[in-house]
Length: 354
Image (cartoon, rainbow, N blue to C red):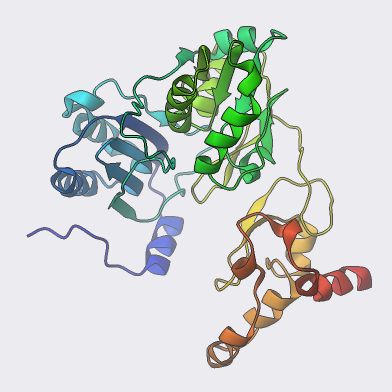
């Protein structure tokens, strides 16, 4: 029986991909489709993708598939043949990464999930295929220039913090499921006005637009292919780019730069910066924005607490683990500004001293 899970240490795999000179293509895709035997589909897909050298994260559920992955350039046609062997994925858009060094993923994961996008919707009558009208980049630019149009960013706060479309409403949420009722409630008096939504690659907007239609919004639109496809069309067709900053992506790259503007700030010193990093203390691992100066000052850690802990040997770390209050244990990702002041005392003192 073939092996259907990776069993090699992740650090070994990461080093292997970093040292490889193999050219790879990074992409994402999704498709909504009713799957009857999810386990069989998952196992079949893992086997076929492994044969093609695919690396990345693929989630499958009874409602379809959602994937972010990389493929060896030489195997790209074989990969597309696998996709197109399923009738319901033949016309699926493949969102090719804009900035790509092929180092975005280092192992293959194919997981079964209750849904391909966690939405918090329990209504059995909800139909995610009853979505809004798709807009290409040109139509998006034209429509969002109108004063009566509401533009909403369907991503999380840490994504919109480093980049977003001009004039967009940016909900201060940690998860997609939080954003749906918040947006519906806050725009309840505009149900008769045009509503345009966007996200990274389109998958969240498929559900969001269907949800807003169910909630009574009469004219709902979504950016087809999300920010990734918008950027491609803007470059190919010479259109005005209305996106400022970076597009956050969920792989090793963290982001793709779309425009030269830096609209965010370092979470530690406040200087202009839009580089996300995970705290190098793996027991914290909080996602935050850190400039090069603070990276050097704190050894890529989010605080002096994590910095000092990381210097300990493994035995001492184990002894101190349960006694130490790491920022990542206390707050959601990228909520660095919400830290308890007591956790920042050492950090603040170190900055003042510098």
